[in-house]
Amino acid sequence: MQSFIQRRASQGIQCKDGTVTSETSRGTVRSSELTRYRLAPNPGPMSLDGTNSYLIGAAGTAGRVAVDPGPLDEPHLRALAGDGPVELILITHRHADHTAGAARFSALTGAPVRAADPAHCLGAPPLEDGETIHAAGVEIRVLATPGHTSDSVCFHLPQDGPHGSVLTGDTILGSGTTVLDYPDGILRDYLESLDRLEHVGPAAVLPAHGPVLPALDDAARAYRSHRHGRLAQVRAALESLGADAGVGAVTDAVYADVDPSVRRAAELSVAAQLDYLRTQPPN
Image (cartoon, rainbow, N blue to C red; front, side):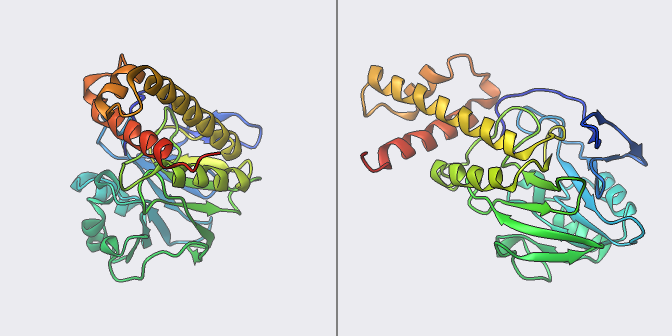
């Protein structure tokens, strides 16, 4: 995960009346009607409270689908495996705080691993955009959402609660905003992905970091507004510094008070914004 706005928040489940509560069981937190998660022990300025490793499954169904096993932390992986049995492992994107434990978790559970990037698959084919997976008594729709990384995907659970839910990985977080891992992730792709997610509607947002959010369409609009606000700041910086100003100078102007621990993340986002502005066709 790459977020450079660090916030802490309690995590929990959105109830049908719109309230948010927490329900813990054996170290897991119920995040929606069909999901629960176990928080990985990898907190930090780039991962908030840690990675939310999700388990998906319908009531009365023994098997579970795991999403983003998280870091290579043996106690975490064993605890997650103990919440199974796990029949399938899904990956939202390639970053190590989501994938480093995947091979070990597959060995512990015997479950295959599927991701958009074949390099992260084990015993199963890569995910395809628009594909529908039927597992653990649940329908899971794969949505390609590049931008944070080129291989980012989200998982739409249309039967999860009154409006469904979407596991958004790092494309939309529970707090703060995400970085674009430029040049692998680019802003044009990211804005298109936000448009796609907005059209899903008011599904619950189940992020890989941070708390559950009540409405995906609202979150996507807020993220788009934030990006366009940053673009306006970058344009203003270029007007002041000159059209050829570099990433470092623009970062100093736009993120003047950025914490040194997340300076690199800010620079990546500025690089993505500069690329977007400099490659946009003229109006």
